[in-house]
Image (tube, rainbow, N blue to C red; front, side, top):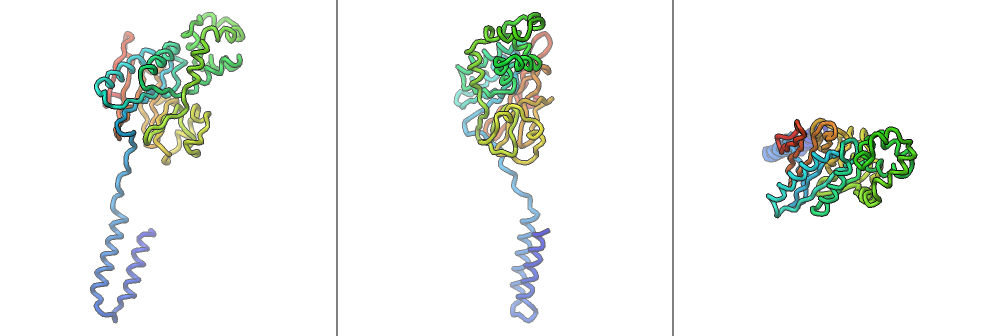
Length: 303
């Protein structure tokens, strides 16, 4: 233990300086013991707790996880957030959607349009997810469309007016030709405008995660949209606490250096938002119930 060896060396040095033949040995010996105790106290005293991450003063941030076409849950979440905002009009509210608005769920078209309307009224910023990327690539070539349809795109095209029977029976090339007629250029341009990364205080918000080996200002788009294992298995500190979606967990996954809030809305019926204010965190959830009802759960009630 290097620090203890340092204490020992100090005692030995004092012993040599104040040997038996030296005058007034008592006072140097008392100083030596005091130094030893101080060093031992430094070694064994508990270290002060690290400062918790914060968002800027006066701000409240709502980060909403992957929606995946669940307009019912999204509407309930919007209503709950709007109610909280009405109760705290002096707070600077920021809303961040973590991407993957589309695919798998029943109403991707409705989610995209609702997000657009909300963005016009509130400070809402939207991150691109890997499913938005696949959606836009589907307009470039038939093979990209085939990949998109296999990964949740079938439900998305139905929400934009394609009949499910036609999607099953039509040749891929014909679906590809009809695609721009169903999804306007305006909608595509809007989805293409989604952001890659948002920072607020000690937090950074991305869709999938970050490459731990790269600084935040040198991340690759592919990692921000698709990364999994290299990011999820990283246990050391990161430049900022990363709030992300993309990987589904049964409950909010707070690992200290990252917080995953994708609770699989399209299959679990649970849409999660992380609320950050000062150094405080809480969870807000919309959960689908029986008969098409949606209930809201706040704080300790949420998972």
